[in-house]
Image (cartoon, rainbow, N blue to C red; front, side, top):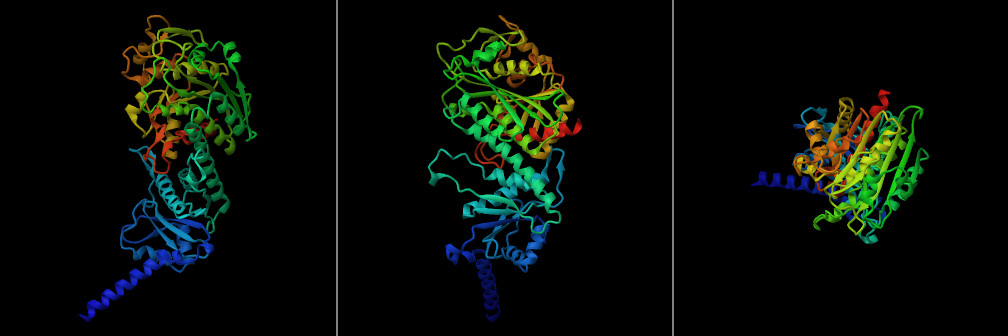
Length: 524
C-alpha cells in the first residue's frame, strides 16, 4: 500500500500547487489589488503548448509559471478557451491565457473569411470579458500577431448601451491597451492597434445610435448628435437641411413618408475631404427612419420596439465617416441621410397614393410599410447630382433578406463587379462578410408594371423575392455605373452569432464599409 499512497500524496500536492497558483490573490487584501489584467495568446497544439511571442517572453520573465500552470490543469486548452491565473507577476493582478486557435490559419475560401484574424477577435474578446467580470479596470492585450484584430475584439466586446440605466446596473468601464513590452516594433504595433480601435469605435457609434429609443433619437436629435461627433474630428463638414429645403428639392417621395409624424423630417448632407475635392466623390447614402410603425400599413405590435433601429443604414454611414476621418483615409466622400419617422395619422400617406420622386418618376405606394425605398429614392437622385464615381447605400430595407440570409452576411446588390469584388475582399478581412444577390430585369419588371404610376413600391408578386424587388426599385433612381445597395436588415441585431459583439443592435457592417473605402482609395 505504500507506493499507491505516495502517488496519491504527490498528486494532491500538485493539485494544491495549481489551485494556489490560480487562486492565490483571493486571499490577499482587496486594498492591495491592482485591478490590472493581462491577456496573453496561446496557440492550439497537438501535444505541446505553443505560445505567441509576447506570451513566450512573459513566461520566461515569470520563470515558466504560466506554462506550468496551464500544464497542471490536465484538460487541453482548445480554441476560445482560457485559464486565468493570480499572482504570476507584480505588475498584473490577473493573467488570462486564451487559446487563439491553430497557428498559421489564414483565408478560408469556402467560408470567405480570414479565419486567423477572426479567431483572434473572438478569443481576445472572451478573455477581456472574463477580466471585466473579475473586476479589472485596466487590461493589457497581447497583439497575438495581429494588433488590429486584437483591438477590434477587445474594444467591441466591452461595448454596452446602458447609459439609461441606474449606475449600479451599468457594466463597469474597462480600459484596454496594447501589451507592447516585448514588441520588436512598438510603433508599428501601436499604429495597428489604434487602427483597430478606430474601426471598432466607428461600429460602436453606429450601434449606439441604433440602440437608442426613438423618443431619445428623433430625426432632429440624430442630426444634432451626428453633427457634433463628426464635426469634432475637424475633417467632416455637416449641413442640416430642413423641411423647406426638402420641399424645394421636390423630394415628394421622402416627404410622403414623413408627413404622418409630428416630428419634422431632416436631410443630412456630409462631406469628408481626404483628397482633392475637385475630383468626383464617393457617395454614401443611408436610410434614416428613426422609428417605423409601418404607417397606415401598420406592423404587428410584437417586436415593434426593434423598429427604433430602422435608421441602421444612417447609423452605419455616420459610423463609417467617423472611422474614415480618424484614419485619415485619402478619399473624397459625400454622404446623404434622409431622416424621418413613419407613423399613422390623418395626414399619413394611404395605400394606393401616388407621389413623384425628385427625378420625376411617379410611384404608386401600395404598402406604406415599404417606406425605406421611398426616402432612399430621393436621396439617391440627389446624390447623383454630384456625379459620384461610386454610390453605396445602406438600409435595413427588407425582412426578406433576413429570411434569405439570416445574420451571417449582409445582402449586396450591385451593377458593378469591380465594386462587389472590393467589398467582398473587405468583408473577408473584417470578418463581417457580404453575399451578392441577383439584380435582374426579372425583378425590375415586377416593380415597373404599375397600374397607376411609373413604378410600384412593392413587387407585382407581393412577398416573392422581396429583397430583390426592393433593390430593383432603388435601381430605377440610380444613374451611376458603380452602385451597390446593402440590405442590412438581417445583420441589424446580434444575439450570440458574433461572439465578440454584445447582445443588441450590432452596428454592422460599418467596419467592412470602412475597409472597402480604404481599398477603393488605394486604387485611385
